Length: 487
Image (cartoon, rainbow, N blue to C red; front, side, top):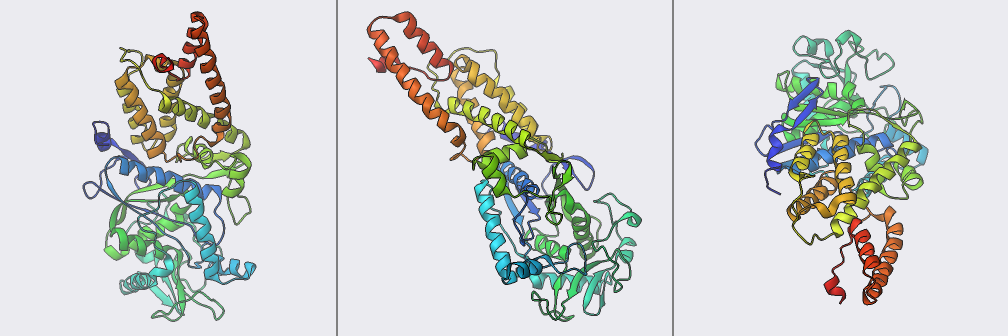
């Protein structure tokens, strides 16, 4: 894959949430890219909006690999019952274990397995490292100890809180979420009297007597807060400063803002953690944010069965036809449109991959090199996948209408890059890509075979006009008949 087109990797631009603008991508280490993406809290099935994030970052990782980078892709699993929204409510994993009547770690195993199965079904690449929060308690405790030593965290009754007032005297807080400190909401909805400031967030929480998931620490039995785990794991596997930190837009605040504050505090800088922060936008239902806590969500399994006949590629196409920074609204109509568009490209790929050019014509109507450059420009402009798909449609229309007019060199180049963009970079699954169209294709194959037999008889009877007419019609759909082999 080393060619002049792939060398265009030096013009990739990424929208950096930290700087609020597109920036030219330049890796910290030549030919290496480090990416950390926040994974799920495994207490339930994921909803469609969650999968959007992982589909988008799968394309991003695939593209870096395609460009020739060595990628370290780290995506965590949160299997600790952290207190995500309210430091007084029961944690979600423990709450779910009570509802289902099984141990918390059984809940974790059940929904981690479901998550992995779904990602495999969607043909997403496995991360290079998939750390789990419970496997990194020591690292989290060590990090909290450093923050306490720096007097940027304080201990109250066995719990530890990050001191926002002390932090803002040294570093910027709110730079990622673009908020001033007075306007920032806290991660807990009720005022915690243990805190010095309502905006302080929990690093370590003292465990109640009935809290099953707890660990021994210098401050007694307890469990880590939500934000400290990702800071600990990203630093361990990617270092104090790495290339890309990603996740859903709902993580920008408080989670990512707090991660950045923790990392800056430990390394005495305003510029730690990631160089580029990337956030995928929401998937809504009837204009409302999808949320498990509000019951306003759809599961992947239900959608795949009801709308795509178990074809995961159609769901991926529905996700990728919108830019990752725009909001997608779910509707049955859009799903149907996605299916139609997806099958349009698939059928053109069928024709392209089964066609064999017989002569090297001189064509001037389609410049394959220009088309390839346009495709790369689309991806290099902050992963503008909708524009790339538009370029694929342009090629699809050409394939279905004028494939015979392309010379051999252009044909093989077009075939190569259509497959690169669709399968290698966008990550559509090859083994079921044609599942939806195969029923019709089988019937079409039968008709084509019968037409070939009829045409053979016509040639024997010297009915040249009709035999040539059949041959031309078959050529228009990419079926090239070699009459020498029919003799």
